[in-house]
Length: 257
Image (cartoon, rainbow, N blue to C red; front, side):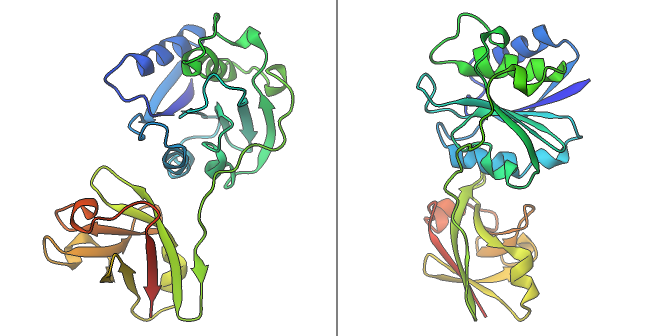
């Protein structure tokens, strides 16, 4: 048994995800397909990269991680497969794999150019079905990356903002919004808590206390906390920070002491 995880922006209303699973299981009947998410906002490569980076490491070694959020489908953007010490990754070279790969030791990266491993004919608009799904299936069967195409040494890195550390403050930004309207920032909770004291989080003209859980504030009140990814998050107890605070992506966030 080999696991293939799937991260896409295809949603579940249409047949796209189901067809990709059909292709994988036709080529590799022992493969087990697990949905990470198919609700990435359409074309939002950064959101997909964050979702994948936040979840891939919970799977056993040898898992194939397939990510298809591909606004450049049908263009000359490369398709690629990557082997690390623990995993295999498949997707377009547009940065969707880059955040996960930064946490791994990359052993090999190859372009997908060998049509022997594609589904023919290849649609110009559905590489998920015709290029990426069959590639993932062949990888579960032990096909080597070098058989799929030439080495691809410099894959695209996504533009990911870095926090700025000062003497008495750390500045960052919101980088992801979940379905509850909670905003994840790029501020690392462990490093902030290591400074001690009572940090306060400033965002959207609000001064928030950093608490341990939603119950640290009254219902309807905004809060900051360290989420399950280890990053500072902004939320509203029983509500949506997107609606109540009118937060947006890339909104400045500052932690002070």
